[in-house]
Image (tube, rainbow, N blue to C red):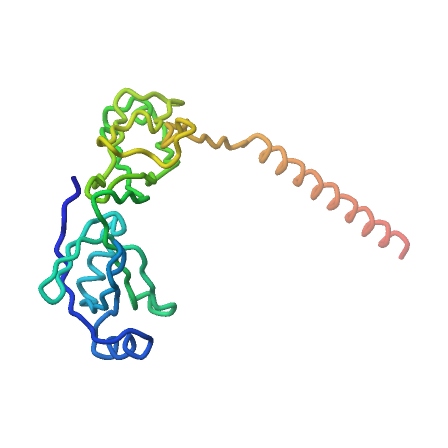
Length: 226
């Protein structure tokens, strides 16, 4: 079950752009809580706390409990608007959910035991195809992270979604194939062709010598004419 984190918020009286701008002038970030067949609740949140949560991977897959005017709302972040110049959050949306709600979320994949992977020890490279996997599940059952074990994998081996353990009731949104999450790729070897460079240098020396000889003959011929 997903950990539920408390997120402090304050109610705001009015909706609309004017009220949102007023909240920003007061140093707050406007937001809204909606969904689950209940009336929307207008809120403001502390920009420092919001930035802290957004900066941590998995923000849109975390369950929060927001208390407003004595009422607790269990929510998921659904949308975040950023200032196009500063990249600072300027609005955030949270969605309420019920026991029957199922949502699509992206969960980050963590790769374990690289030191136990023969392919990597032999110079192979971990080629990550999917840094995160989109899952379909109930909000209370969102895994914090997915773990892929690299133990025993050789160069050329692949890790498919079937090799990653998922909690009960959680499934990938792609169900028609056992898609690849990562591979152990062969190392890239760049060979330097030194012989060709040497031959090129010898050819250039020969040309310079020939030009010098021709120039000497011409000068001697001129002196004889005098």
